[in-house]
Image 1 (cartoon, rainbow, N blue to C red):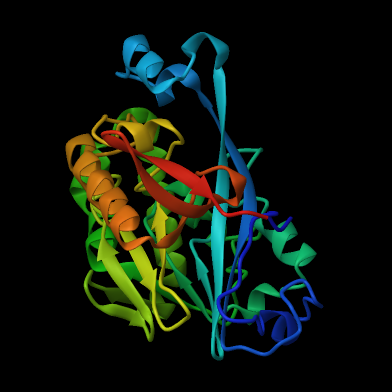
Image 2 (tube, helix red, strand yellow):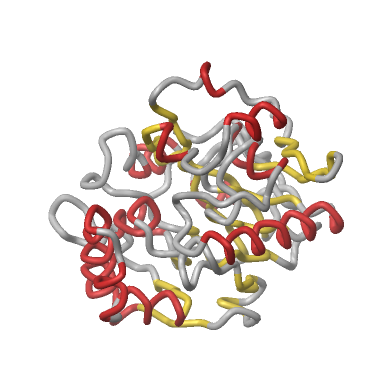
Amino acid sequence: MLTRRRFTIGAAALAGSLGLGSRFGASAASDALTTLSDGHLEMPTDFVLRGISAEVLQEIGVDRGALGTTLASPCILTLHRSGDRLVLFDAGAGTNFMPSAGKLPESLDAAGIDPAAVTDVIFTHAHPDHIWGVLDDFDEVPFANAAFHVCQTEWDYWRSDAALSEMPEDRQVFVIGARSRFDAIEERSTLFKPGTEVISGIEAVAAFGHTPGHCAFVLHGADAPVMVVGDAIINDPISFARPDLAWAADQDPETAARTRTALLDRLASEKLRFVGFHLPNGGLGRVETAGAGFRFVPESA
């Protein structure tokens, strides 16, 4: 389903062009953005918080004992209409990764959006919950008319010998899955480098660490820029209060921590709206400074 947190840039023509009724307002405009739910991930709490002490959590105000054995992490995809382009950031998990995820087809259907209407799919990175959705149960690509856009560094990494040899055994399926999806979309894929426009008005920003070629994106050309941060910021409130902490989900935790700190500083200083893939309340919001760290301020409904 569409998440309750959504916003439009300008007035929102996404409604008229996609048959969404008055949900986005009746006025015409060239730019609109919303978020879609792909369900959620369920992960062992001990894995998610590995290496983060109870003392640190207590300082942040997180009661480790109240968290239970499993954490649910929302999966939020961004859909952006710009002129005649309908751009989806990431493709969700599909049906073969985790039963609680892979709900994007239902969300698109609830919004009245045919996957064939998507003109571009831009990937933040190639982890399963972001790219496995480019294949359906019949190994067909549901975005029949889309061009795909992948960072050159990310593309090269997942196809390298090192990706498989260096990956822990329990994550080698990530490599196999990424390669099969890249194979399926290769003829329709364009590779980009950070610091360039992926398509007009969408700038790629290096956000390495979570994966070797992870990117964020700044959407220009509307009333105010918006940043799509993917998994560079993955937990509220811990990542905000202590962006320097290492996370087990990051392939290069030290680089990821530097990236996270720099992004949060930019988001706070420039007062940018942003979307986080695994953040609560629909993933949309702003960042404010809070003491030596930051805090997430979700968009109002």
